[in-house]
Image 1 (cartoon, helix red, strand yellow):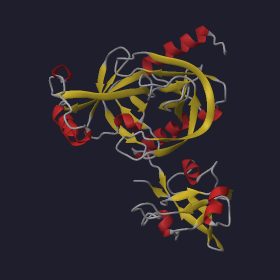
Image 2 (cartoon, rainbow, N blue to C red):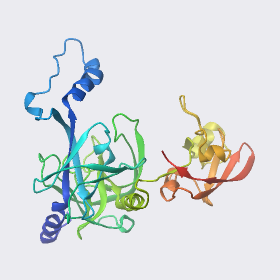
Image 3 (cartoon, one colour):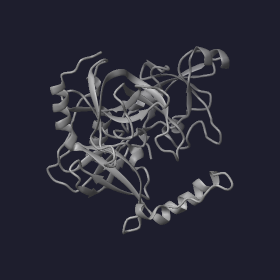
Image 4 (spheres, rainbow, N blue to C red):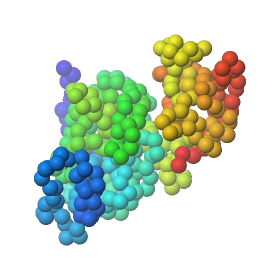
Length: 349
């Protein structure tokens, strides 16, 4: 068992906790009842009892608390980082509750179109903040704390653990209204991540945030995942420069090739990204950078900027390190013909 210096742990918690907030999600009673009638009741068996919102759950303005999550202040002027899925509903109202109980209305500044990250703001001056670290420098086995403060129910939720894995990929569904997506480059930790600290910071023993607590694997013990904080650095820079998060778009659908797929489809190579179509989906998005560059169905993209595309480094991984306007030099195999294709990345909408 790893021994931790209790004084360091306690000191880190005391320094970070004031900057960790709860984010309350509220909707009008009318909207909640409409969602129940539209999405919940049709799924219930015949004869099921009616669903009614208790009167005590409705405030004086007719608003109902429907959920929430955690976040953490990163700038003294009220900038907060949280999970995108916490503030994904554009019809909802959001309120931040500080660790001292003070409440503030929320302004949504940006939602990352790819990663489960959102940047919001509250009207406050000289706020306590969590210092942002460098997730490229974390190491396996180093001690971390997952901290949260969700809804005032699990106030001051803290769990202690270590970094268990790096650059993990999982299939997740942050937004229940959207299809599952692959989240890559995640930090794996055995520090418990739960509804009390999802959206809060994963911090090192210097009190620096190195990740955003984001996901758990149901049925697995001691396995939580955080989004690397360098993603937040990038998104914050975009918001400062452009007023929004700008992520690059290539514009194609693909399968990453390995030895099994090569044999199954009779391909010439056991690596690369094979351009494929989906149900009612074009293999190449019309008028996208890939479309304008002439990428076609069944093209096998072997390399990006001179580096092989593999299961370990997919096209998505390459795009994580790119910006809007960057030019990619792609090595493409079309049947038995090889070619080089240059693609200028556009902004994902």
